[in-house]
Image 1 (cartoon, rainbow, N blue to C red):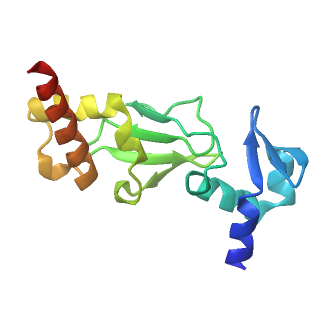
Image 2: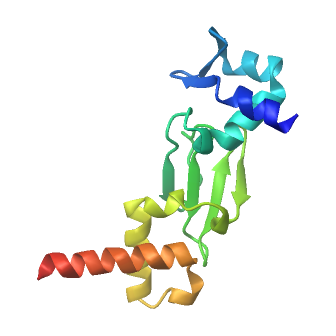
Length: 147
């Protein structure tokens, strides 16, 4: 059953204006979700893996954004350590930062971490391994650019 669903996910395309295309037919999000609830959930959960969805945005803020689309990420920076959330189309759900690294490549977030490290707000131990790697890489690049 899961393999059949995986085969079907690649046939789904997310279109502008919250529409979906599936087997040469176009559906509004609400209709697609009603007609194919399992496929819709699987598509949203696996959009980054199959590459058929639009690129999700990553917000780095104190407050939850109000202009999010399904699959967007939000790094809540008013907590230590920062918490990561994903918008499921209805609400923000917290996800484990160790399960994805796409949020780490948001320049605003890396700058925030570097600033926090320099002010002693964070220690390297409070960052995930990927966050540490990206921070070190950015600092090395900046150091090399100055020489």
